[in-house]
Length: 81
Length: 462
Image (cartoon, rainbow over all chains, first blue to last red):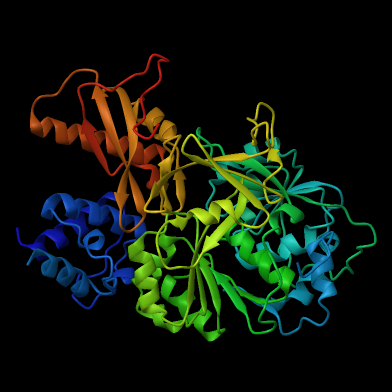
């Protein structure tokens, strides 16, 4: 599975587990408007570390936090390059 | 100090003179400090003088008003945070000997006969003049998480809580805010700092989004703002992070890693960025603002008015900011025989700086929420397929840490698919019993867990 599909799949899984209502997952969706809270993002990043074998948040201490879903996916895609 | 040890918040606020420009702004309303102090809890229509009162307001603004109006009048007030389960209200009230529970939640009146629904700043409250002719030193009780899920009650006073608060050097220009709830130690520090130094304060709303709060904080010209690293990571994920332009950013309550310090410096280049160590029991210890994770050895050796030492790898603190003790029968002592509070926070010395590396008791800090492994293990162990379990921390860049569990099954499962179904089942069981931040993010099945000669589980940090 490519990075984008893996992220979308994991977002849906975390939302379902944590009983969160997801907004439509478009690239310009603000992460804080997605329906996921901080704990959901923490779980998501943990799952992605297992699935994609990377954690760009911990690897890059100077990177700005992604704000939209598009930023978030690009953050992982750039790290995968 | 900007005060001569005031008996109460009322003294400090009224001594500051005309405070009409210095306001407390909540999401639901605002008032000057003077207006808050002009009303008296004695206008609430219930006897408050000399009583032990549990304050369980959902709205922070109402909570702030209640604290100002009760301090110096009530014998004891228990600060019950809005996110603490309401099922524990009666147990906490019993432990604190509280015979009155005040709240802005009408539904709670059905839960306990001691509950009275009061809006301390609402129009319905009588404008009784505050009779402050004979005040008492009110005991302030803060809640902190306990191993069994029932909070521990920590005894403070206005004096111990305000020991780290000095005069505001930029009189009149400072506007404080905090992501914390003011019923928690970190938020209470900011509330008291604003009250005692006569500065404005912007509080978060109970149901307010991060973006809305940041926009409101920006409109009110917030200059100084505090939160946990997890609060700040969330703020930086918001497009509204740029709506505030603070000159002082403070982090506490969790380990501040280099990434969040760098990101805050980049977002707020004009701000002094400080990370502090404080705990509900030990009080405020120190703050460093050199922009590096960890803290220099001098912070331990030369912090004025706070004595610190590292014993067996963990930090001990003695100062007049320490809590007096825990409330309740059979409570453990809060201080060692020399009067030091053992924080249980373990330190490691690397390249001349101390770094926090975890907790001696294995307690896990998930985004500022404390998780005691024993509480989670007790739930997992009730699952019929589980023999025993060990709950551990896993590092996380968003909440600092997450909870994971090693589980020994009664009968070993071999099929991989069967494993997954059982993992899901155990997690589902946990979700039904535990607050979300306490539920493990992963269950690993292991053949055995190490047990010490004492019969206790060997904990990785122990």
